[in-house]
Length: 400
Image 1: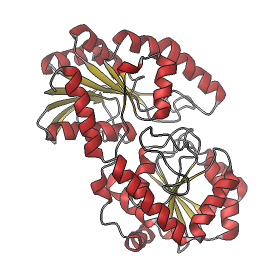
Image 2: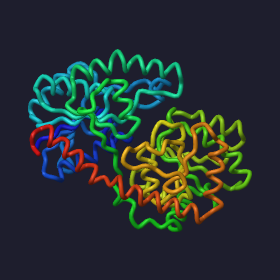
Image 3: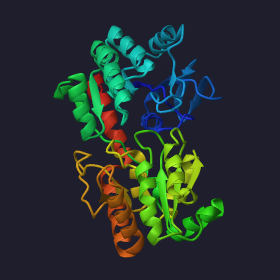
Image 4: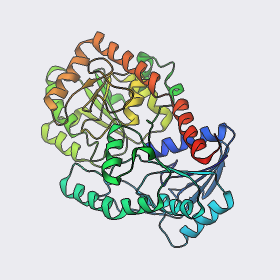
């Protein structure tokens, strides 16, 4: 089967959807399928590359200015003169049996969707980001863009299936895009669990202290993922005074790009900036060890969803604290106090209490870490997720 994967984000560009689309591409190729990836140019990446049995074509692009509307994120678009013809030419030459698109508001999704409609080729659209914002004016703009741009284009191109990666996405697709149930597939994201075997806390903590000596000998709270408005770390910083009152040598290790730095300003105002260490974006290979060396992981605190970073932390056996709904994943409910500690968005006192509980009770922390790890291994094994994605592609293309 010939599979075209479309995503404006693809390595070396980092991010959740880039990670997922890259993993799927490698899996499809490993199963003997021909895979073409069409993405936007990024950094110094080669315009045409072949690796892992995948052909990657990066089209000329431009980067959206870093503003509050773009979450101060380096979002690349390939909406440039001549690119639509290039997309059509690439797909006409490759002759895919199915197109797997990632991201409903990206121009490459729209262009490949138009091609698939005109050529009568089935397509799957996986949504990774909701057009939502905690800032009301920007949220209103997103709602308008969804209504007057994304919905009409998506409705016109009419992908064969839309994939909802969680309960909130399912509700979002139903409400925003009026998509009937028969066109929606519920399929979570996954974790490459082989990266999280044979991790020893003491060994990884020693490595962490060698790499970042400023963490010291006290408790370490890992906070993994890019800092953006929907994962702004503000509530975590607001919880720190109550944590430091009991455990003054605690440190927060923020691992990811800083696209929103308001939390640092608040940390300075509260006098806790000495407890916050920012590493910037780090190589994927370093993440399992840093997580395993921490005492807990905390970053999903605003009710915008449980991301891959939280699942990776749990896979590393690290207890987590999240301000998220227990039924976020439809087929894998989280029990508060078992797989994780759940709080409410904005309640920094409850967050501080949960953090202090994990610091003070090693038995509870170990129990939650082990239960969370088993929960991820039972429900989010990436090869199984990839296989389920491939089954959808086979079914809609008549190759099952």
